[in-house]
Amino acid sequence: MMQSSTALAVVLKRDRLIVLGGLAGITALAWAYTGYLAWSMDCMNMAMPHMQTWGVTELVLLCIMWSVMMVAMMVPSAAPMMLMYMTINRRRREQQAIVAGLHQRLFVQKSQQTA
Image (cartoon, rainbow, N blue to C red; front, side, top):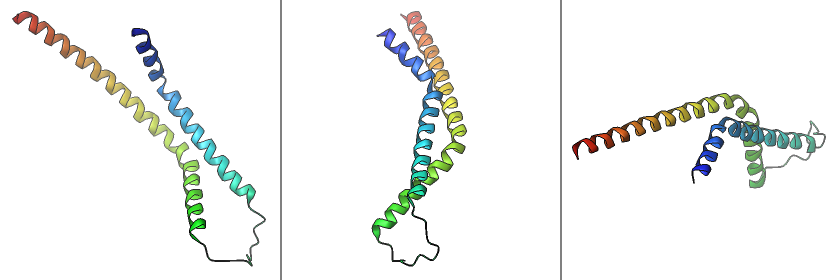
């Protein structure tokens, strides 16, 4: 049991690498999809002679394309702030664990003195 908890602690210490890997993966997928969309467009005629009204399908695809492009552009700039937030949270949890352990130790000592 103790060995598995230390393995978990080692993995949690690497939270920056895990988050960076996830952010890099999401960014790469979003840019790949954006590139695919740009590559798959036929030479867009500027005159667009076959212009037609958009249906629900085109609007849904437009929203998906816009969302993916926003992820591709915004995640790289937001990554440092996300990493800072994770670091601050991890340090806060570590400090709370130390304080909780201290309170527990004082409680045990106090209860032993009264017994």
